[in-house]
Image (cartoon, rainbow over all chains, first blue to last red; front, top):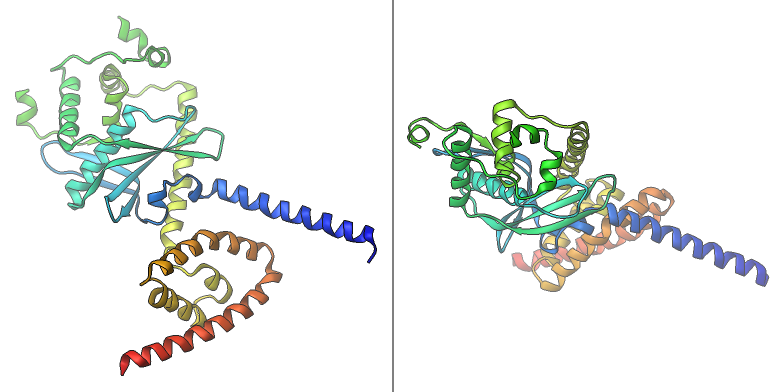
Length: 177
Length: 151
């Protein structure tokens, strides 16, 4: 083979390697390993969209997006959210805490006092994981009781702390009146 | 307060409860008038449901393939060689920390290798040959090891 042919072969090889690397990279970005926290990568996935119900005087029904069994901490919960902003909110913490409460009440298993909020930015495939500390069971029960008092008219509801929420709210007129 | 204590509370869902972290007045209005969404919100909810369904399917898939020996299962299916390699993993690698590290490294890279093998099936016979030889050696090793323990 002449020098030109060798150059051509080298270029073909380089292009092939780049193509394979590119395909693997895309596959990795989309794959779970790119967004799963390190401790959950090799943990056993035990719940996917499971529904739990706590008994007692404040029954809570919770659908758990994912629950992983981790040796050190027990069951670690993960909740998927699709939104424009890559951040977790108080509502996510409450939701995960309610799930934790329902799972503990129904199964008696130990659920970690932290969880993960997985944010998928709308229109993109990339996901971001945020670790959040969960509320204690007493606070979840207190919150459920307060909610009941509000909807029964026994207590006054507080306004949202963010004005941006009110701007999007369908009830903003009624709320001001 | 008394009313709440005397009658059995209606079950509240975790997502309903999470609304308390958004706006308590919204919780009250939604209870009185029902949920009211703008077209943009409805679109976002629909998109969320689609992503949740996809996420669920991925989860089910992940649960199903747990414990599988990826490459061997792809090449041989469920047969003698796969069983031998699985036994090698569980009996000779898993008891040692270096072995566990090797298993982790394998599970990290195997899905990508499987994908390449699926994309280029012409590579499969070569991998099959290598794996068959390796599985044969492993099976012999396991047999001799098992014999020693038996004695």
